Image (cartoon, rainbow, N blue to C red; front, side, top):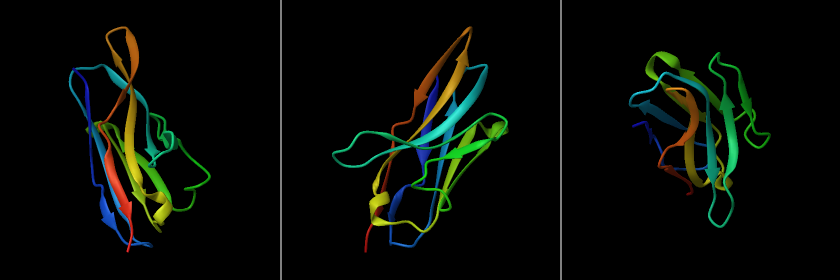
Length: 119
């Protein structure tokens, strides 16, 4: 069974930084794309950033220049470095990964980690 476990969320003041991590565990062949989404209260889940296996990133316009996605394939882990945080970044952050198990590829999701940006 494949699991994605996030960590690193919490309460931070505006202008501060957080680093989220998401590690995949279980029995699988390989991981292709990995990414981060956020879901703010009362809103739909939206893409924050995605990164290919080769390390090519793509960030949403709202976070460009502030957030950076990266990954460590040896650790099956994706990271999200968040700088210059603003109150509107407050949300639950979910990681996702496209994972090959046997002959099928499926998108797996973490349980989410809460980020609160507030004074």
